[in-house]
Each structure stands twice: as structure tokens, then as C-alpha cells.
Image (cartoon, rainbow, N blue to C red):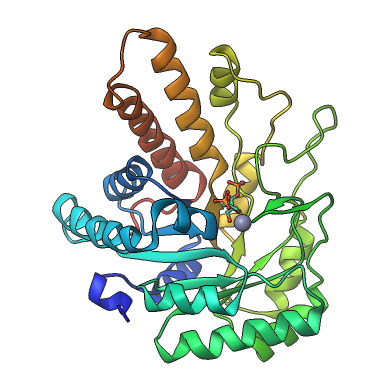
Length: 322
Ligand code: G3H
Ligand code: 13P
Ligand code: ZN
């Protein structure tokens, strides 16, 4: 077993406490390759933002689970070199779908795990989440649970419609599972097609969030599916031969409002994917004779850094808090 402290990581406890007091949210950026990881470390160091390196089950098998531990260690060392004092880093399992996967991640050095039982019947979600929390807490690893279902794609499971979190369930769920944070469903969704293309984008259900805050005062809330699907990158993808019609995301002002509340962690994956894809398409198209991957991955990485700096500074308010 590699304990996360040996890698120089932290769990999310202190980070969430400070985020709650400071009225900002910590970015949880998904990564599965070197350039994404470099971008997260650079952007968050330059803006002095705490950061959560988020790894899905698919990303872990893509990058290789052994390689991933060394990437996390490398990220910590790189962060120390470029920011003084160093800013904390959490490595978190995104949408863990089984007890065994959570155990495996904890044993390989993750400092935080999500067990996503949101698709299960309520009592089964509680039982699975509690089992993971009991194991994780022996090692001081943070645990995120989920109540309510987001529309879109969640780890190979496609949900046509969202089922908003029922505020009347949250105290019972948190009390019986012993989770450290709770992901809720208030109108965000996964992927690049969050809302029907022709309809007006509906506002997030802040009334549900407020009711949850009343029932769980000071308890960290997590927002998944929080990409804004930046139009500039959707247009760039389409301009350079891609086909993303009607892709739309969550309004940034709504996210800023959420970040001021008990929402302490905001998950962003699709925006990074869109930026990388758009910039790689552009670079390849503008320089068709190039066959050096650094010449298209480099600009993509630079664009990702700018995107993340913008999120930290203007959307989540996490800049300057590291
Ligand atoms: O919420 C899901 C994340 O965007 C991860 O997606 O399973 O394709 O890596 P993935
Ligand atoms: P997006 O698809 O909106 O980036 O959401 C990512 C996410 O919730 C990862 O868990
Ligand atoms: Zn998610």
C-alpha cells in the first residue's frame, strides 16, 4: 500500500473548510494525460488555487494505474518547484462505481474517493457508501457520496433526465453514510450537450441548494457537470472540421453564484476536452506538414492553462487561496 501522504498529497478536509469560509469552490479538473496534468499544476500554481486532480475509472485504466501514482508524485514535485510555498493537491477518484475500485485507489495513493451509488435504490446507496467510508476513514481518505441523478453520461451510464436531489433525504444520507461531502443534482449535467439546443437554458435550482444548506449547515457540497461548454472552443472545433452541433453548458454567472454557497468542489472535464480538441484541430490544420506532437499538444496545453486560470479567477473564486 502507498499512503497518499507518502506522495505529498492531502485529503480534502482542510481545503473544503477554507473554501466554505472563503465563499469559493475548489476546481476538480479531470485528467488522463501528461499535458492535462501539466496544465492543471501550472494554471493552479500561477493563480495560487488549491486543486483536485480528478481521475475517472476510465482515465485510470487509460493512463495505467501504476503510471498514475508516479504522475501524481511528479505533479507534487513540479508544484513545489513552481510555487513557493507549495499549494495543496488532492488526487480524487471520480464516480467510483464499486467498493473494490475505491479500495484499489486508496491502496495506490488516492487521497479522496467518490463512491457513486446515485443510480441505486436509496438504502443500497447508503449501504455501499457507508462501506466505502468506513474503509477510507481508516486511512484518513475523504469520501464523496451522491444523491440525485444528473442527466447526461455518468461513467458509461446514460441518463436521459435528471432527478433532482431531494432535500428531505440529505441529513439521513449524510448521517448514516459518514461521507465528507455530498454531490447533488440541481440542474447541471455531464458532457457537452447539457440542454436542448433550441430551448432557453434553465437556471440551476438554487432553491434546492438553499434547502440542502439549511439542513446541512457548513457541510461541503459538490457540483458535477459544471462545464460551461465554452462557445469559443465549440466554434473552433466546428471551424476546423469537427461536428458539435448544439453543444451548450452551464452559465458561468450561475457557477459563480454556486461557488459562493456551500458548494466547495466544482467538477470540470468537458471544457478541458473541448479546448484541447479545438486547439489540436486548429494547429494540425494550420500546419499540415507538421508531424511533431509537441507542436500541436503544446498549444493545446497553453490554451488549457488559460482556460483554467480563467475558471479559478473569474468563475470559482479559488485564485489566491492556495
Ligand atoms: O463525469 C465523468 C467524467 O467526465 C469522466 O469521464 O469516464 O469518460 O473519463 P470518463
Ligand atoms: P462536465 O462534463 O460538465 O465537465 O462534468 C464533469 C464531471 O462532473 C466529472 O465528474
Ligand atoms: Zn461527474
